[in-house]
Image 1 (cartoon, rainbow, N blue to C red):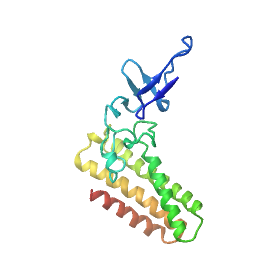
Image 2: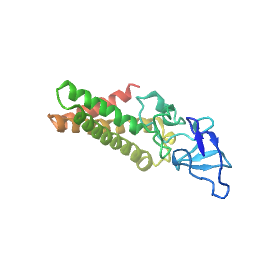
Image 3: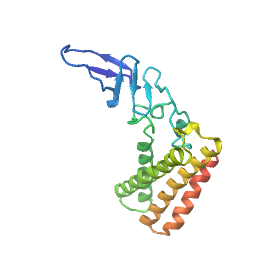
Image 4: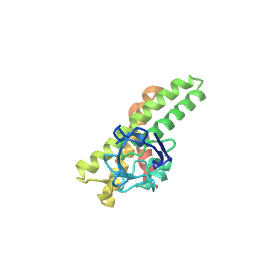
Length: 203
C-alpha cells in the first residue's frame, strides 16, 4: 500500500506481501530509484522531497506565465491539478487547453451559441496552437541552433526561439478561430501571431 504527499514523497509505504516484487513504477507511473531517492521522468530526474527537478527544463513553455520561468519546478508548483508525464512540459498543455475551452465557452455564451460546443472548439484550437508553438520552439532549439536544451542558447537565440514559438501558436489559434467563426484566415493568423509574439517580447 502506497500513499503520497502532494509532490510525490511517500506518506505511507507498506509491503503487506513480502513475496511479491516491489513496485518500481509508483508516483504518477514514474520509475522510482530507491537508491537515489529520485523519480526518473525520462528527460529529467525529480526529487520528491524538495518538489523540484534536479536539472532545468529545456525551454520556457509559456513565458507569459510566471510559474514556468522556474525551470526546476514541478507542474507549475500545483501537483494537485497537473501531472508531468515526460519531465519537459510541466502539464502546461492541460492548462492551455482548459483556458482555451473556457474562452470558447464564454464566447459561445456571449453569442447565444451552445456553450459546450464552443468549449469543445476552444479546446481543440488550444491544443493545436500549443503543439504548433511547442514544436517550432523545439525544432529551433535542437535542430536550427543545435542545442541540447534551451538554457544552452545565447540570449539572441532564446528570443528568436520564444518569439517564433509564440508567433506560430498565435497564428494557428487566430487562423482556426477565423475558419470556425468567420473572417479571413490569413488575417486572423497574421494578426494573432504578431500579437502573441509582441506580447512575449514585452515580458
